[in-house]
Image 1 (cartoon, one colour):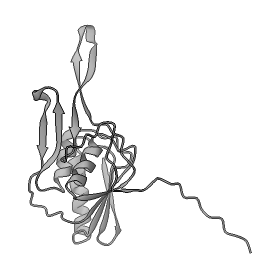
Image 2 (image 1 turned 120 degrees about the horizontal axis):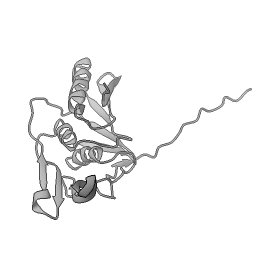
Image 3 (image 1 turned 180 degrees about the vertical axis):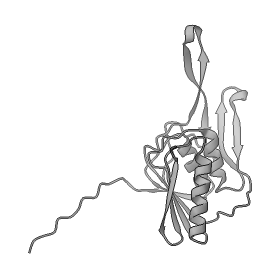
Image 4 (image 1 turned 135 degrees about the vertical axis):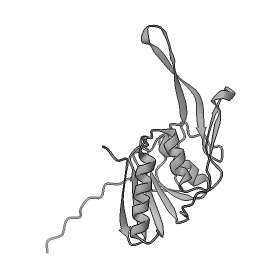
Length: 191
């Protein structure tokens, strides 16, 4: 079985959580990783959530994971031309007190569900977004069956952050832009 989250302690009190995608088991994987990090460090002083190159996945997992760090307010809204395609997802108070500072790492490979998490935490001033602008996949599709096993896939709505920003084609802009750079080893000068 594949795990969609892994973690490590960077130094005492500071954790690193990598989320590779949003599948049915992602929330459980993350809760397990967070509990490990929090118990190892007698509570965290800070957490880095790495969403780089995370292509997204299930909407409900993105909503529930955002809710781990938020206690109230909108997480994401889906707005379509037809009223039946419009929904608002909200955060609710929980027993876990996760008030420690959070930094979310993003890049152009962060898409869809990962943009929902980054946008929700950014709009609620719950996390600092660090990296480059995300992919910009903020549309909701559905498939209408046609004859002889064919179908047509079309867009019915768009995702919006809590502050009403459209994710589609714009992405989530980081609070601090940090370009990806390959570091090369410096050659020692012979003396």
